[in-house]
Image (cartoon, rainbow, N blue to C red; front, side, top):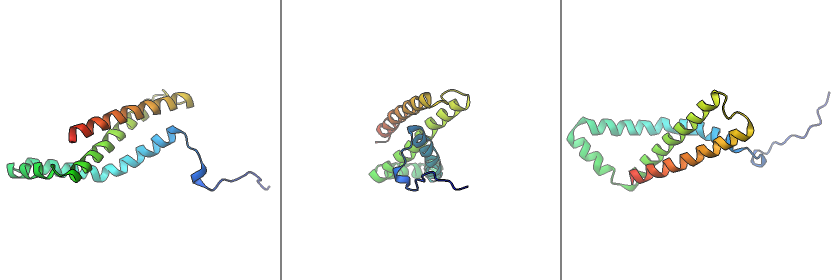
Length: 124
């Protein structure tokens, strides 16, 4: 039996709902955190090794590029944490239908934006 349904092979024309973007970015932030957390752990180790290591790290943290890297890592952590909490809430059965799922995604994005701005203020 031949299937005459139209097939859309151009992914750029597919309009995904906001819930899909939040979910995809949650996975991407988890992958990015693999390197970011390694940087933060190195910084923690350097700061706890000696007073000289702490002073060196303080000097390093005064550079704008290093601040940007730390802020992006914190932004990834914030995004992954808040989106993960949203997923955990959905695992309990709350927000699984389309309308409440979209509302939950918008709330999560708002909370993420505020937390990322606060992290930027803290780093800079």
